[in-house]
Length: 102
Picture 1: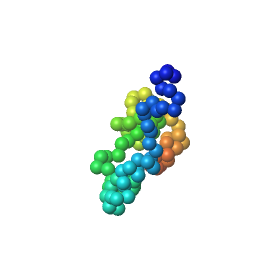
Picture 2 (picture 1 turned 60 degrees about the vertical axis):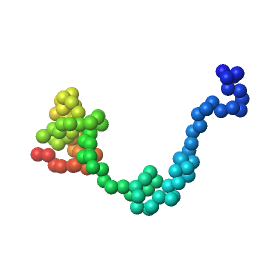
Picture 3 (picture 1 turned 90 degrees about the horizontal axis):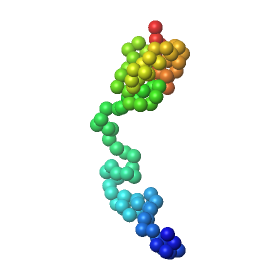
């Protein structure tokens, strides 16, 4: 390997820092109201928000009708049904959907 890349010569791959990329792209020349990678002013997403499982964090296509906890598959549904009331309220509070269940 030492004869292929003698000391002091580059291996062909050059990484740029974010500051170098921004200077090369000349983002300061764009109008202020145009959306780009530098400003955070962008329109809301056209896609609906994804819903995630309250237990695992996977994408959750299902919601338990009794507890309103989202779940990813049948295994998590079984776990949800055996959870105590205070745990259910804790999961809902993490999602800012705390409701008093009867």
